[in-house]
Length: 478
Ligand code: BGP
Image (cartoon, rainbow, N blue to C red):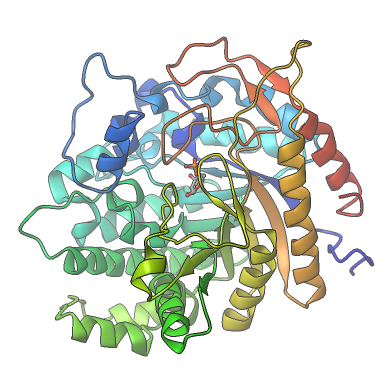
């Protein structure tokens, strides 16, 4: 049943978080170290996330923001109560692999880690908030990187399968919505951040990345298959860092290039959703002399383990050109390369702001896959200042979200099936790309600064009441 405003009655409004960006407690409860626990803030973080720096031990005198993050590990009850006050129907979190298997390759899970997520799910369910769980959101146990080279190794498929089965079995009556890999296409752009991959000079980068991609795709298919066997009601999705690439002009070369760029990302979802490698990917492998090693049965597995829905993040559209002059306008700050689109504005971090791009992207994904879509990330990273009364009037955030909600509604009215929307970082959290706290997305302010100082006190921003009204009216009052 849909109301006139488009949003279905059971629409899952909420917010999205990732373990490594909120929890802290980085070695508490027996948790092992992960890739993100070795990522500082600043320039070094960029180089590490691209896979250029090998760094397996925390260094003294270096501040690692994931170690304390915003202390969700100890404050989850307080935070969930605030989400409930806003009327959240869903909260997307990720499970930290290293809380469950500190090294990643153990046979037996860590009971303390399992208990922690039991507590979080119980608290959510108490407030009638549906948990939406990402199995791997950027944090690979560091032992798997050191010992096996992370997803370069086929062994990771088995470890991931064991990890997935363990959590599916444990939480089968508490969690219905799952996603296998967060922004799986990040692997091609930030290999260490996305998949724990460190690149060596002598390696063929494409060979390494697409081989790792194959391992993740097989692992994802195995997890989907196992999950459906454990509980046939499970809804298990993929997760794409989405955002259409626009051609700069109507020059057919530009059009083709835009299409080609989008296929770099669609490649993953084509396999996860349709269950087979698309022709353009096979051609790419051939043209680049890539030899993707596959085991017998892999192609059948990919077919059997297709996802139930398409989860995606949307922050920006991208723009591309084949004209060398135009290419000089490439903008910095965006993880996915883009030139400046003269028709759009940008955030303080240089991320293109394009609300209509959300409608375009949603339509595009729906046309391509004909599976329910779940917008599991979207939002504005901005600097928030406290005014003389200690209030945060984040009208710019409200304006950003309002514009995106209107376009989301248009997409639904276009006939696109969207099951929910979880905005990124409903409470201020550590930024994945920069490690900063200053880049804030929340409806709730956290007194935590870039250098780790601050009381961690939570405070509602103006957008808190606004989002609450949106949810309460099911999108009628935007
Ligand atoms: C996505 C990630 C998130 C998140 C978000 C915002 O790429 O899935 O983990 O952090 O982007 O990015 P940032 O934190 O860099 O602003």
